[in-house]
Image (tube, one colour):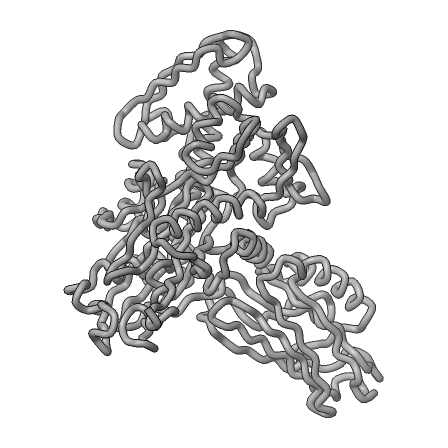
Length: 550
């Protein structure tokens, strides 16, 4: 027992459903819930006597949609005023209130009003998965590799990390969902997998022959694509692109709005203002959407939908594809961006790997095949479990439970968003471009903008806009003690360091005096207010100018 290594688990916290697994006895095991299901709905509900999570919570939405909460991942890291939140609110049967520009759930529970942030609801789903793991393994679980969508901004990563922490877990690594799926593809295609990767049996595991793969992930709330190069023992993510607010739920919303309009035409009554009716209609539309993946038409039948009026309708696959055509095409945009950034022609892609429940939709598969000139799609891994599987593999690699102690598959992930600082004229001086492999280190030499300048304000941003203020402030500090001199004389080196966990350290050093200051930007959500306050202070100090810009 003294040699027992407590495993870390791999968690895929999805918009609509979640999955968790662990590497054990030479393979990944996906944990089932008590009903035997290997994924759980990312739902939390409150009856008048208890809290429900997962399948029971989603089922309870038929009884009390206003007390059945979902889409917490869609809200995490966003602000109440964001246009995406305002658009989605039309289709949410629960009540959402503004608390300091944080979208906040409001429900009645045991006769009282309660409010929950998206972080809290996400943490409840993670807690349920932790409970499933511990029940299955028979011991406590404390660490996890957690996946996140490509393109999650820093604040979203912070809040997701906080949710995991609230659930009693430590995040030992964040990896993108498509990177995790690429790792899954590599491992399920190992020759003699069981023999090659058993603990302690082999010094060098060759994943397979060199291969270029495109991993495409379309789930309930996000869509992303990554170009991944498999090269012996290395998994090299060349590029990644995604939309963090587009997926199967947007198709549900379109179908819901269409059916609400049909109801209005038939009865001359508008049900969209009634949250209970919207919730019931949305559930029926989601069911119909799923049915249309395997049949050419689906029927929606709801008794007493609104003001005691029954509603019946038939939707064909052709109608559904026509009304959602724009969204289907938008779902493919990350593929184009990922290919462009990878500098690979689509003809060089050897395999197209589909993950995420929405990739079951025939129209999405058809459009991808057309884009790649009829190339067959790889559908041999479970699209609902592939991301959690890869996260579990990565967790085992980190913990040393795959191969001998210290064994590692070289997994090269990317930073999904560009990082830089504000310099003179409000310009965004980029130090790290998006799709840069991590870990990485970059430097930029700055100088003073004014004669006699003794301090500079360093404001750190993420984003792609050429003007810093149009991007997102993620950190700030002041470097003072610069010896007064004519502008352009002092030399200040700014250095960005990102580790494998995506933690960013920014330092600035005056080369003349050796004076230095730095800030470490972690995934701690409690830092946000301090960042804003420090940024406001920095605005009172002169900025620097890039030596190259002089």
